Image (cartoon, rainbow, N blue to C red):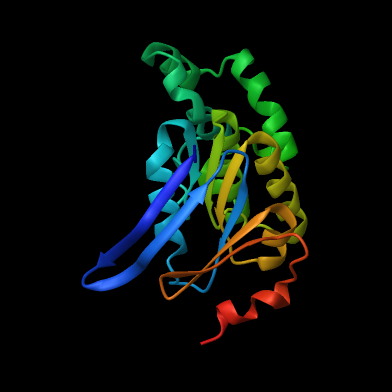
Length: 218
């Protein structure tokens, strides 16, 4: 049985077709990249897939949803807010528990944020904020990860680290990506969209970025 399934799904906004009769099946364990030009429908497709399984999934959208007045630690801790009661969460907000700090430290170390653990979000660069949102998803510990351009604000070295972390921590991964080289390197299946239509569904094995040029032509 497929983990995620769309059957001839069409989405329209203000009379304009964003997705047109898209059919797609995703199996557990797949690592998938949604690729195509801006406006091709990648974010809409990602959201549709996330809605099918959000109870057991983590999502890192382009709008990261971080609390700017709180620290990196507290924003990452929010990945597991629902595992504790209100009083526990409030107490941890006032004075972080050592056990919680110990769980989050390895995450920030892997993401290159160890020296920012108690810095507030409004003190961070865009790339550091994006890595904090990734850390929140990693801490949540879901089986499925959805990311909308999850490495768009980080440099190349950091992007490779983040992609490795995402893949290692989640059984199934679905990413909207603009970097086709990264997509080929870290996923096993490419879903190509053009003008709201699904025009490519192929394994990444043996694929080169130049093979995808047609997706980005006008």
